[in-house]
Length: 432
Image: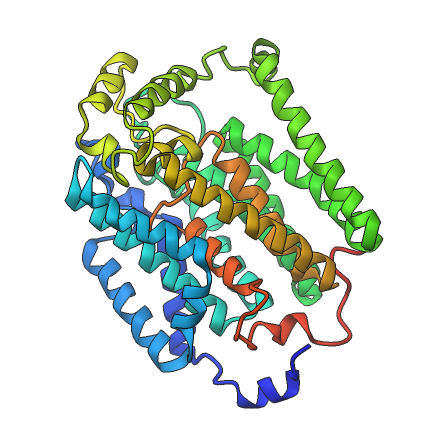
């Protein structure tokens, strides 16, 4: 265990200006309020992820400056995280074989800087501080979503369709649902980390759950239900320790595999329970078409972000389905289309490594925030079964992917992150 007092004495704490920059960057990465200037006359893939290009470029530049000024050794820290380095590098060089080289370079570069912002966030803020900042950002997203929904503000990409459900301050109901699932997790943990704000945190949990239901996003509703079931299970695992902890992980993995097997073999029953058709509102056909297109270029794909932008196969899929499909509605399929089997294997190996590290981190650090990494990875995994946040540049999910990865790195040179985890007289992780 590092010498916490020495780290604290030597630490260059973030200034108010730094915190304001981080807050704004995180808020923009959620995509909230973007639907105020959404252009519904272009394809969904043509709308920017975060604000304008100039604002995004400014965030990149400020991130580099802050890394250089306040994060000594950040380059070595980033390079040691081979899953982040490899997948972002592969994304950039995919421009060599891409159907749209300029798009792949832009997407790959954006992904790299998204990861670098995550590295900065991990170095400068402890896990507890990360969750507190996220709570403030997502709290504003909740308030804005209620205001937008009640007063009919903003525009959805589904505005010309018959899609039911709120989209709030986001461009689509699925985006609102995914963000509110993340918000539910953040406020659940913040309530345990900071008892002085438990009332506000409880309101955040309630607001998030209401918006998930109002979104009518089945993926998000199922994900948040699993999250609420997993939370007490992790409390038991955290108290058990040792062999019981390993047994708990095995049981959890077995339950997940059994559930997936049941879903695959009982599609009519499951879809009927969800109130959906067997085609899952067209997603089943989309997945079949996407797999067929991925098999045309299986090993390296079409280049990151290029398939839906510039490929004839994407046009055929959109014509067959009768709507402007922006992506495959599955994070794993999207990686396959963009970076091929090679990219998918690299990402899955890295993701598996981080899940394993997060479990070890939870077992070795008996504090509430130690549960955040594993729970975040589970939410990220479940969200990408029917949506796409994997390798999505300038998004909060990929920012936090790299942030969490660096925060739990076993050989990290970052001492700052231990400010919250190593402090004495704190409540054990997830325990009542």
